[in-house]
Figure 1 (tube, rainbow over the protein chains, first blue to last red):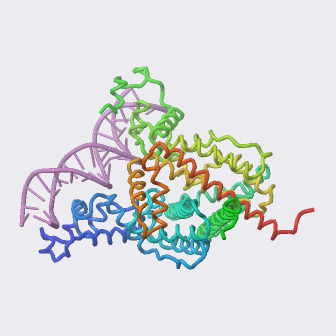
Figure 2 (cartoon, rainbow over the protein chains, first blue to last red):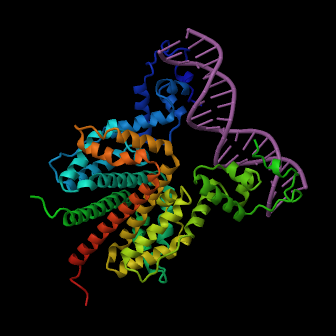
Amino acid sequence: MASSPSVRGRSRSRHAAGLPAVTAERIVEAAARLTAELGVENWTLRQLASEVDAYPAVIYHHVGDREAVVSAVVDRSLRMLSMPGEELPWREWFWRLLTELRLVLRNHPGVARRLSLYGPSLSAAAPTIDRGVRILQRDGFGEESTKVYILLLSIACQLIAVEDDRAADEAARRRGVESLSSYRDRRELPGLAALGESVHSLAQNPDELQAFFEEHYEYAVQRCLDGVAYRLDVLRRDGQPSAP
Amino acid sequence: MASSPSVRGRSRSRHAAGLPAVTAERIVEAAARLTAELGVENWTLRQLASEVDAYPAVIYHHVGDREAVVSAVVDRSLRMLSMPGEELPWREWFWRLLTELRLVLRNHPGVARRLSLYGPSLSAAAPTIDRGVRILQRDGFGEESTKVYILLLSIACQLIAVEDDRAADEAARRRGVESLSSYRDRRELPGLAALGESVHSLAQNPDELQAFFEEHYEYAVQRCLDGVAYRLDVLRRDGQPSAP
DNA sequence: ACCTGAACACCGTTCAAGT
DNA sequence: ACCTGAACACCGTTCAAGT
């Protein structure tokens, strides 16, 4: 109802109405704002248009279709990520990177999903990728450096993507927790009962959920780092039997 | 155009037209067929309706909204999963489970994503969860058994979900690979160049992609199992110093 | 109880026309 | 070059009316 631009700028021309010119930059900025608030999948082109006091077709003129707007938002988010210093050992470097990645991406729900599906645009991510792979090479991963880099980043993005979606659908989440915790007295299914028991406290105290997500992320990332560290041992044992 | 049910059954009543009665089961079966062919997100209620020679409102009458249809499809898929025997050691048991999980879910694209977001319905998944957690408890994971179970299953579902989506969008995938491999001669970015080189062969030979996906899944799952195995060592070392 | 047929309120996208 | 305003072809969902 209040979404038509003519409601705010009632003259036929933006200029006559004293509205600022629509630019691609302003559109992407507004899209990033909507994304931070609603998530990348939960705003419409019409909403975005009214956010910059314009018609939907104007978005197409300045940026392109929805896909183009979204990938500009993804790039913008990625550029907020800062890199840990390259003097750090690989495990510490990745631990810091992935911890900050979560903080940045969780502020723009849906971006992590896009990253795990299409990867980053290289213009935004090249420095990070380059340094990450070089650090793995330096620390002995050899040919497997690229595999390990992809593994760690993609698992992190996937975990964050799921966290985004779960955070957005509180009702579904609560249903799931309650249904699980209802099994906690089933003596004939002791494994399932243990799982029910372990989520039971979450069902009672919803404030713990944020902390639970964070803990789950850290636990998963640490286990992956453990697995990769173990792999490094194997590579060193089986590779050329120690460098000069 | 050819989607109106009256095209096929031109009488006003299904019975008079000799059409079989619409049942919830037949609807879910058709939905599973469409899902296998197109993926869970890529068919519409109107398509599903015309698949059973009925009007969209009939789906609502027998099953419910789109959400209800989809979760019936998810359940159906899950019941196709068979469990490895409980005599296996934990690592072997999970390796077999997750290998078969991928085979089953890849035949119903989009189901893995739903599982990673909302979890399984317990009626379909209770036996598997129970056995998996009990095996971890038996093999020494103690209190962390439930965490480890969730970790392994959720990472597997996430990997499969991404594979589903990437397989569906071949164009985007090829763009990504080509853009990456264009960096393979950048001497000033040696880490990125290594990554470009490692995907270069994929860009040339698209037949390898299927194998690449499978290998990536196996590599990721093995590294997670490595990490969990390492964790078991830590738990044994720090826990009560060996049982009687 | 089951099905029909139309309607509702959306969506992304396109396009001729204005200035 | 930039914006207007309407239209197009969809979508999930609802509902009164028929049998």
